[in-house]
Figure (cartoon, helix red, strand yellow):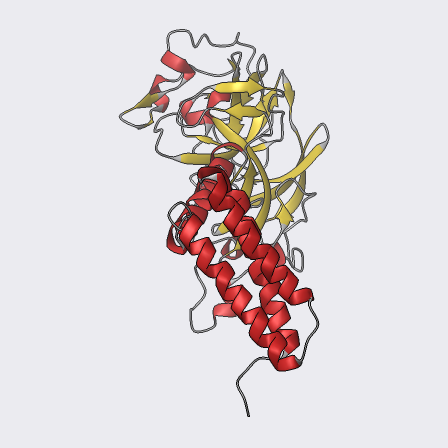
Length: 369
């Protein structure tokens, strides 16, 4: 049997060659002499005529293949010295894709991983989430400055920001106070008062599901009582928080005037790249302009504004969107499918919470920070 292609296949190959030659002529033609462009055009037209001319099958295939070879020869001769090699085009395509990815990461959307349990039960250790970097404006990368600002963080927003005491670290917390708010947090259990009113938190019951959120997450205030889940509310936003014990009788914001942070540089209590609570004034505090007060939802196990002060708007990288993957590091690699918390995939960070407290509640896997 002959290896000569059939007329239909020869016609198809010729049309591909015509399309490629036209693309090269359009892309590189302006870089060569008019006479050379005319030669390429003439070769393409001759191949088009060969494809369109009816004749016996063998003669047709031979004529089309010859015209196609002429096109290839003329293109190589007249455009070969200016067109890019396949390797160069491939590398440029990769480079372009990398530049686009870097621009997306710098200005639009970025992926983050949750390494600790400070945001349980909203986020779990091993959650991978996307953050919208355009939520509040356009932030200049590598500097604490908003280039263009079109909105401000609101109470209840979960935000990723540059840790004020160490610019090489990113933190994720929830906004509790905005500029002008007077904030007080009791030192034993983490209950919050904003502008003299206790933040609305309804007890849901004892929380016993820490093992679903990552490795041991024993809280710093564990001696204060059992771990209790609360349903907290800000205008338009409900979320779960964890406290040890219940509010103590008579506990509340003291009648003292708000402390003056003017003597603390940049409204942050830091020393040696980490928080230094001894430098922070006593509460209550007034949130300064252009800053927010943030806390972890796991109130007894979170290093947050209580320890180091305020987060400037320019340090906020964006607002958390949704969890695209959740990886349970406590599970064995012998059963890899169990390492994925399937029920958490594509869960919105600001979605209405499901209670995880008490027996039989919280069938879905849970969150951390």
